[in-house]
Amino acid sequence: MILNDKTIRKYIDEKILEINPLEDYQIQPSSVDLRLGYDFLIYPDEIEVLDVKDRSYLDKMQKIEVKKEEGFVVQPKQFILATTIEYVKLPDFLTAFVEGRSSLGRLGLFIENAGWVDAGFEGNITLEFYNANSRPIKIYPEMRICQLVFAKMVEPAENPYKGKYQGQRGTTASRIFLDKN
Image 1: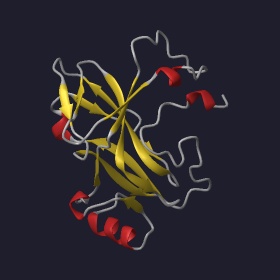
Image 2 (image 1 turned 180 degrees about the horizontal axis):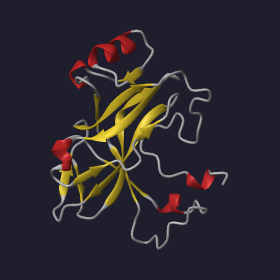
Image 3 (image 1 turned 60 degrees about the vertical axis):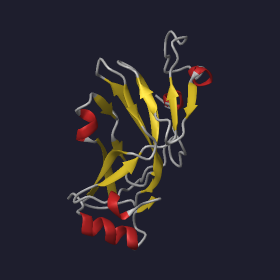
Image 4 (image 1 turned 90 degrees about the vertical axis):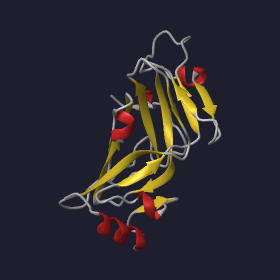
């Protein structure tokens, strides 16, 4: 069952669902708009191969912090990581989908390609951006960048999320090298 605005507000008021900071205008009929944070991660051209078993790429990634009024330009065919301003904490019976905004998709900005948030997750949401347009796209911190759609599970998760991204703050690079298999 997808949560509506009334239930989202109720869960937030009762501190069952936490989204901080949050303004009322962000709550939509069946989702919550999240805003773009201030830092971005870029995989520089000097990295020839991203080896999933070798964490050395982390040292080479370029972190860029921008001010709201400066904005950030996503170049054509560029892949970057970004983050939300909001810190989200899900209970063990809610899951969420990260969805891009249609208005940005119509410009060619693909937002998230791994858009599932497990029950029990807490942290900032790291977003994956890809500019599919042949033109640069300028985006700005604090703009509404994506939306979370919440789904109530039939029953609480037996093992809520406690994975390698639990509690992440800011833009977080891949930690696939921590996988056991």
